[in-house]
Length: 87
Image 1 (cartoon, helix red, strand yellow):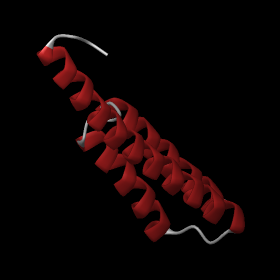
Image 2: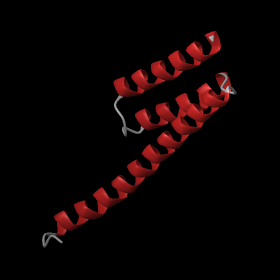
Image 3: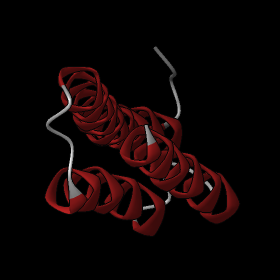
Image 4: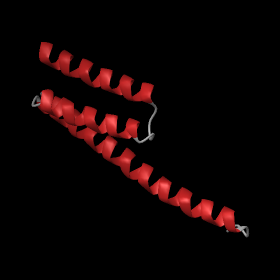
């Protein structure tokens, strides 16, 4: 634990931010897994895609993942849905 008062405060702030980011990332991964399960079960539709994309957008807007990474993830989600619909 640091001795300097400002460093102590920074430790507390970083812990809060880390917890928040971890929760957002966890929710993102959970929604992606649900989308994967829906794809495998053959029940994936635009609604499931929208839920997964919404989680990606929320993570990107809060700065947990980069904007370009979010766009890449969303493109891959849509691509997989289109591929499954074509089959």
